[in-house]
Length: 389
Image 1: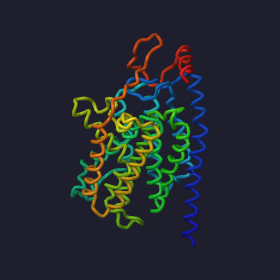
Image 2: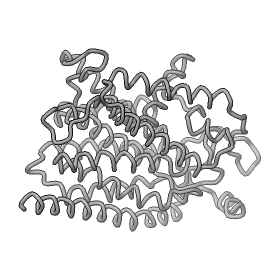
Image 3: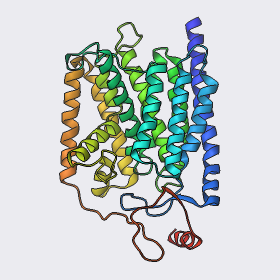
Image 4: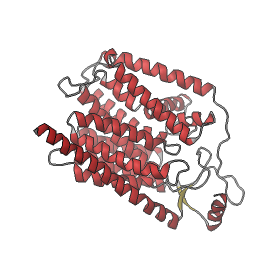
């Protein structure tokens, strides 16, 4: 009877947390839109972006406000001391992304900020990978290698959601999917604080998606996408460490491969794009139009269809990983990579060529770069934009 009452209480906490985050974000985003309109702050199209008219890109402010307040109200810090460091790292990432939304930061400055956030998680919050859990035959890792792997994992996942945020609704939809999976698992394994963290972000993202479906009224910007990546990095490392324990309520074999499957669309796309850029002698942070959503757009699909396809693919790999969890992480990971790269190969070599969107100034000159992602529109530009609509 006591267990039933406890479960009901936690279920109510989850529902309230998701509801509070949803309501706060839903009420905050129109305010952000109003401020962006008053201050004439918009993200304008350029040669690598797919939107064709200026759009406010500060949706991360609304997402972060709902997520943080709901999480702080529901998670009891005295029993979960590590969460104070999670929130500290989230603040670092949020303000790093916010500054990049307003005034473009160099890749090196963004990288330093991400390293600072990762160091808070690893050294203070103890979010780290000390074991490979059987992947490629490795178990416990040496201290130095464990630290390097933890930093690499966190930074890559943080950037993965930033890079996948290229079309309307995609990053938010994938974020909702991963939060629901992680939140559900931590709920049934009695890691309630982590479940509340996941559902707090899920509620905010659902509210944001109302304004972000195609054609989007607002973008989440780096302040939103980087933060989604940070929360996913926390949860996937915790998931791997928890699910690998035989004593946990619901142990999952091949936990490393399962964690990779949950994040496969943003994570694999980021690793693939980084590898291509480095192979071509460019910085891995150099922007281009080689992401999976660009390849799908080149096949003639619309924003909603691309988002649905990516989410469906992600769900397929999660189901595949769960069904094949007895194969071991190494075999399961190789199978997933073979399927994924086969699909990408077909998609890449059969893509159609579509024209890029080039931003054009009112004087007729081509403008390939802007000093900031959010620009103040002149009165003439605003009138022209209104005429387009």
